[in-house]
Each structure stands twice: as C-alpha cells, then as structure tokens.
Image (cartoon, rainbow, N blue to C red; front, side):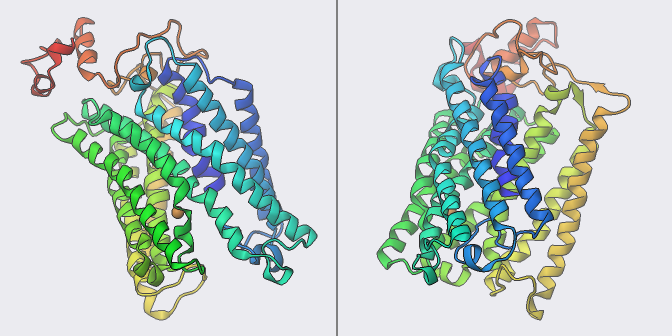
Length: 483
Ligand SMILES: [Cu+2]
C-alpha cells in the first residue's frame, strides 16, 4: 500500500500524464528514464509479490530492527530488496519531474504561471531525490545485518535499534509528504476549476508546498518521543512538528477561501476534493495530539495513531488520487463516466471511511494498542463499527471502479476536449491527447484565469456572457480589466 500505491500514485502516475500537458510540453524531459523507472517499479512489485507468495512479511512497512533482522522468519529480504528497487524508481521519477519543470516550460510559462499541481509535484520531486537514498541505505544495512550477521541495529550483535528508527524516519516522514503534497496539488486544481475562480492566495499555496518539503526533513524525531530520546530533543522535535501545521493550514484556508462565493459545480472530482478538505482536516488536527509530548506518551502505539495515519494517507492522498483520476479520466480516454454512479461510489467511500476510522480515535484514546491481531472485549463495539465501515468503504470504491470501467465499454459517451471548463493547458488539447500532446504550442496565460476562458467561449459562439453584468462572480473579480 505504501511503497507500491500511494508513493508512486499521484507523482508518478498522474504526474506523468498531466504534468507535461499542464506545462504545454510534449513529454517529460527524459522519456527513456521514465520508462526505466516504470520497469523498476514493476520489478520491485514482483519482489513484494514473491515475498507474499513465499513466507509473507510480518514486519509491517516500517521493518523495525532488531525484529526484522534477527527474529522474523518471514520474507524480509525479498521485501527490503523490493523497497530498495522501488526507491530508485521514485528517485528517477523525481529527477525527471524536476528537470521537466526546469527545462520544458514553454515561453511565457514563468514560475508563477505554473498550475499549483506542478508546484506540488516539484516540491515532491525534491523530497524524492534527497530523502529516498537514505532509506535505500537503511534497507541495505538491514539486509546486510540479516544476511551476514553484521551488528548494526541488533543490540545482541552490538548494534543500536534506535539508529534504525532514525534513518528510517529521516526518509519516511518526508515520504508522508511525497504522498500528501501531490494530493494537495490535485485538490488545488479541483477546487479552483470547479469553483470557477482563480485560486485564493496562489503564491502562498505554491510557497507552502516548498515550505512543507523543507520542514518535512527536520521533524522525524516525533516518531521517537518514547524511544528514549533526551527531553530537550523531544521538545525541539515537538516544536518543529507544530511548525509543519502552518503551511498545511495555509492550504486548507486558501481552499476554503477559494470556495467562498465561487460558482461551484459539484461534479464527481469536486466531491472528492471536498471530501479531502474534511478528511485532511481531521487527519491534520489529530496530528496535533500526537505532536504534543504529554498526549503522545498516552496515544503512542494505539489505534489513535492508526486512525490519524489513515485520515492523512488514505483520506487525503488516496481520495485526492481517485479524485484526480475522475478529473483526468475524460482526458485520458476521451470518455465520460456516469456521474450518478461515480457520485454514489464517492459518497459510500467517504461515509465508509469515516465509519471505519473515526471510532478508532476513541478506541485508541481508551488504550487499544495497535500491531496486535486481537483486542480486549471492551473494544468490541468500536471494532464492530470499523468492520461495518470497511465494508461500506469497499462497496463505495468498487462502485467508483465500476463507473470508470463501465465508461470504456459498450456505448461510449464521448468526452469533449474540456468537459469541466478548466483553464489549465492540459485541457487545451483533444481528449484523449495525441502522442505529442499538442499540435501547436498553446498560448500561455496566467494560472486559473477563469474570466479569460469565459470571454473566449463567448467569442466562439457559446452562450454569450456579459463579462461584468451577466455574472455577479465575474463582476466582483473585475474581469473587464483582465479581458
Ligand atoms: Cu512523521
């Protein structure tokens, strides 16, 4: 789930598809490296499948030593080698995106004319390149200790298990932002385009992506508040952790401010974007309890953490990923899905998700530990509701998948080039795009210039819109000036 789905999901999959088009480019900077990175992903996936089919993996995604090096008899080495290979896939994708953003921008596409999705992918790429080598080294050391008995992490061999936690989380906290930053980029696109308004605070959202990327490197110690760090180190990491809340909150406030008085159209991708605001809100705010030293001692290793983590990872990253798929689906395949079915899927997934994970906050705060397959009888009712919620979530996601698959079969509903009336360049080519994306380089305007698009549509024989009097939204935004 972590290494094969969420980490490559938005940056590699959606990024590859949408980023060059949004830049007005015909492809990423290094198409062959791109393909190599995909094959590395496939190879890493194969290693994990082998791990599953042979002895399984009982360490979780964290591979904590010394259990993983000296005690577990599951297929640890297959999994660590798989993750090692996936790391290179991630680094190459990041490198590709970074160079693409620097080198492939057309004339006129200045840094502050780039859509916010690109800013998010750019910040993500920096993390991928700088942090991923560290987990590569950690996994290599783990493999050496397990295979050759060299003491690095296992105290019985003279190693230090907390060292593993340090280098693991030095990567894996930033990795959380490899998953969440691109999700935030998708949400920024969706909120702006479906509110028919320029995004509120464009620069502060762009800079907050960069700020999150920087801060993400100096907060890893919050995973080790109860691992025996000194008090002063704990206090410093706690304070730094709270600082990440600032750029994260900037994004949420700006999304809400963009919605305010927008002419909102509630298409399926927008449902997902609105769901993410709620889910990331819960995920982010519950992080404050875990970043606080006193409460973390109580909540550490309980289901509170499981719930928090899922609200951030699944609630934010995966819901935004699915929202992005629904958004770019017409562009990818040139077909429209059934909105009613798609919305039903979104609603059930959202409801199911909340029913699954909200009770776990309560169970965790009452002391239900994580990483056990069983629980004490007093936690039965919370687990009952979590099970019901998980089933609803599963049904919702299946319906969402069905609506996508169904759109490709039978009588297809052909998608226009720009079904959402979106303003970024990815909607200026045909659906699906030709292999080189654009026959002529599209003209570059400011990001999210919704007034301009409406004006152009009125010239092209669409319902003429008086740019000032016809629409109160446009009048307030001063569109006459822009036109
Ligand atoms: Cu963290």
